[in-house]
Image 1 (tube, rainbow, N blue to C red):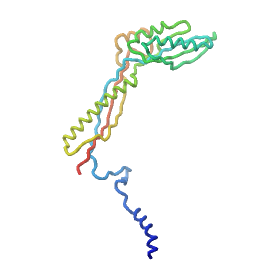
Image 2: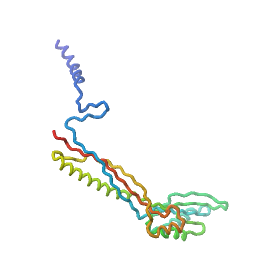
Image 3: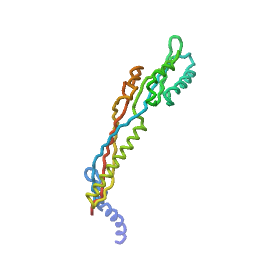
Length: 243
C-alpha cells in the first residue's frame, strides 16, 4: 500500500498544482486587459496645449548652372564652378545636389548643375545679381529656388522651450492636487507629446520683396517662411489611494 501511495504522491501533487486557482493579479478579464489587484492608484488625466512661432533668418537657396563644355571638359568646369560658388552667400557651404548631362548638335556637352546652401537672408537681396555677374560664355548661373522653411535645429529649439512650458504647467497641476487632496501625493505617470508644424507665410523683411520682384527668381514669391508649432501633451498623474 505504501508503495502505491509513493507512486500517487507526485501525480496528486501535479493535479493539486493545476487545480490551484490562478492568482487574480495574473488573470485577464474577458477583454484581455490585466486586472489590477490591491489598492488602485487615483488618476488624473488632462491635456496641455501650447504653441509658438518658429522663425528663421536664413533660407535654403538652389542655384542652377547651365554649362556648355567640350567633351571631357566637365571636370575643369565643375572645379571653376565650385570656386565661384564660394564667393556667393556670405560663407555659405554650397553642395552640388543634382546634375544632368546632354549633348548639342555642335558636339558640346550640356550640363545642368544644381547647388544648394543655407544662406543668410541679409545676403539674398543681391544674390541673383551676383549670380548673373558670375555668368560667362559657356556658363549661365541663376537662382532656381528660395525656400524659407526653418531648419531642424530651429524647430527643435522651439520645441524644447514649449516642453518646458508643459512641464511647468504639470508641476502647477500637481501642486494644486496635493493641496486639495492632502492625503495623497501625486506624481507623473505619463506625458505623451504630439507636435504639428503649420507653415504660415509672413511678409519678408524690408528689401526682400523688391529683390523677388526685380530678378524674377522663383520660390520667393514675396513671402518669407515661418511656422507655427503646436505641441499637445496628454498627461497622466497618479497617486496611491489611501488603504
